[in-house]
Image 1 (cartoon, rainbow, N blue to C red):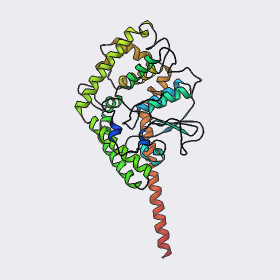
Image 2: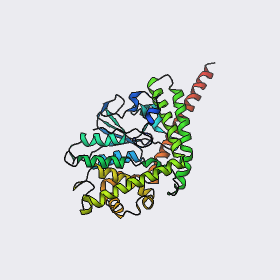
Image 3: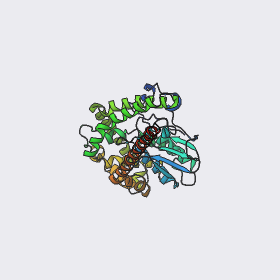
Image 4: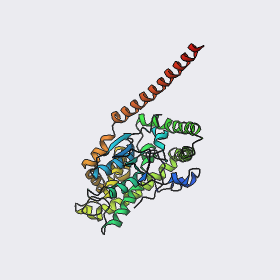
Length: 348
């Protein structure tokens, strides 16, 4: 089973919403680069072991980490800094792994899978040693329905936008978001110019520019954000109905006695919205959802893969390390250039 959503964000899994046709509008991107990759051989990927390319605060990186934790998989993390002018996701080395220029990317023995929802479904099939999160029993249609419902929440806009009547962004995020998209746009234009003679990179950067332009339009629109909040309230009403009428009312999980991929996806979604202080606005009238949220957040896997990654020190430390590395590279290039100039002058 492969998720059929289209991605718009740098912390990327695709979304079925008013943005469903986003990739179709970005027609400049070659068709191969618009599709999520599933277990595709890639010479640029690590050829042995399980590797996850991710950013700590990324919602979709949390999704990929969470499924690996739930399945008990040992894996190596590779940090990709997608903010603060660093933008590792646009570096050619990474784009050759993931043509969408987004995180996360999962590599297993040299084979690449992209798009967070796609990674979840692939990992559940690929690692059978743990309990299967997507069951093959009579509950599978209900589980898929609830998984899709959780995936339909436009978490990125709610995380990084300021909807009327919603919680305000923390001051440090507000300042970063105001400049982040402009810096991304400029970086992509620069990369496109630098690699204009490489057909693959050129197609990837052109496609990402088209997508980023659409993303900016949405996050800068109060009406769009207001519509997203209203749509999310309708989704929460549906979730509440399932909780008070289904197995959860008797102490079970959302779709039955066992924890499934639907619970995992709702745990991730509710945890992010809770941390972003949307609880009162979106499910303040639904105590069943709040109880479900607390039950999910108490799971060790969610604590380890989601909550513990949302710290300023973890994110700030990564940004600092990347900026120091970039500065060191620039200094090294300047020193090398000066040395070459010195050699040339000595020869005269």
